Image 1: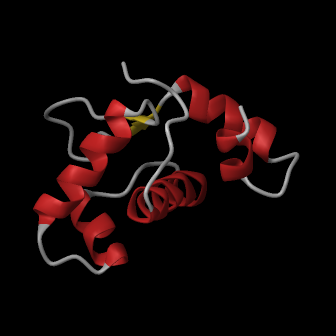
Image 2 (image 1 turned 90 degrees about the horizontal axis):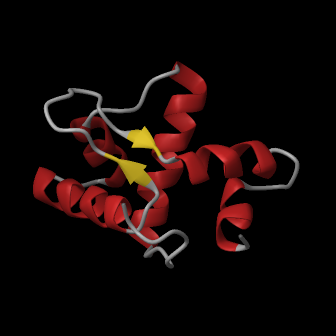
Amino acid sequence: MGIYCLPLTDNQEKALRYIVTMINIKGFPPTLSEIGRHMGFRNLGSVFSILRSLEKKGYILKPKGKHRGIELTELVQRKMIAGSRRSSIFYSLHHY
């Protein structure tokens, strides 16, 4: 498991925001292709790299072999609840 609350790059934050939003709206995470389209990437390697970084930093878990296998870590889930009382989950993630 990664170290929580390491700073995110702009692309990492954009991807995490999209993942959280899709889970909140649809009840399940987006596919790698959906993340790539949202971010304007043609190469899924860029998406893999971002997700690997988010996993190392402790924001997500990416179990192998699952099509929609992105999971939010316990910290992110707790901060989503706390963040709902503030203006943004990302405020609460960065001010843990």
